[in-house]
Length: 324
Ligand SMILES: NC(=O)c1ccc[n+]([C@@H]2O[C@H](COP(=O)([O-])OP(=O)(O)OC[C@H]3O[C@@H](n4cnc5c(N)ncnc54)[C@H](OP(=O)(O)O)[C@@H]3O)[C@@H](O)[C@H]2O)c1
Image (cartoon, rainbow, N blue to C red):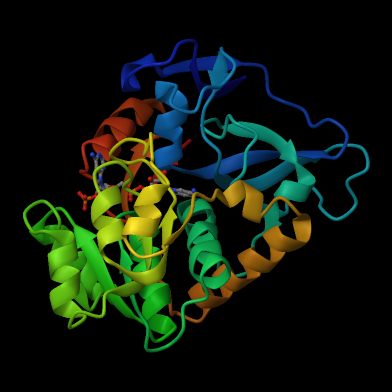
């Protein structure tokens, strides 16, 4: 029997229940994985709340790492005992054992532990496509990255620094400010008390930034647009404070012929070759020591409710894992 977290209704953290069921066996093209670590991601809260609706009842979670137990028909490239990680589901990673498509799993290089993989794949591959694909950040450029001490944020600060960029990061507390600076943030904006665009204007001597990476959503949308220079790019990639809705496109004209994109990791890694290339890029910067993965909290799988409460209450920093 295998323990997993399931939901049969949308709602607050309390709708997640620990249940027990039969061990999953892989179908054709699939592998089953004994999880050693499970990644906690903000998207899990959107699935749980119904902001991103799932067919119910459902498992939850998209990311984990561990050891292959069984391989299904047609899987040639992997075998039981291999160490792998994945971050694009199928939904149900909050479990002891999960079956996933083999072509969505990435073999873990020596030196990348299951903890590091589960703490970094979804967040780190996101950073990869944000700063290496959507907008290839160059040395000497100044960029704005919101929630700089979060899971995605701490990886982004380090990677941007490694590229030679000047990083302006927003954070909601003194402790988070210190963490973001340690990760390479050059300028901190306390967006709980300072006006973001005014501070960006001061920091850049009026030049503003060519790109904003915004995973906070509703509460930072307007300030992010106001922080861009003419023809700048707004990358709105998340909804931590709520989704951005009802946008009048004319705002892009009035604020300086701006561009906007609302991307998802899953579209940037849909092809196996793209997933592998991004994972190689991520594991290379981790392996080289340029990006360190901070696992600042761990919860037993059975306490997923507490993990969601803390993530949504802005109590977490860096990456968090669930331990099966
Ligand atoms: N589109 C994609 O492909 C993709 C992929 C991965 C992640 N994401 C998005 O990236 C963002 C970061 O994800 P993560 O898993 O690394 O989470 P996280 O950054 O560790 O946690 C979210 C952070 O957002 C900040 N925040 C600001 N307003 C908030 C509010 N009202 N409620 C809660 N938090 C608020 C908090 O930091 P402060 O206290 O410092 O404000 C909080 O710690 C999320 O929006 C996520 O959905 C998108």
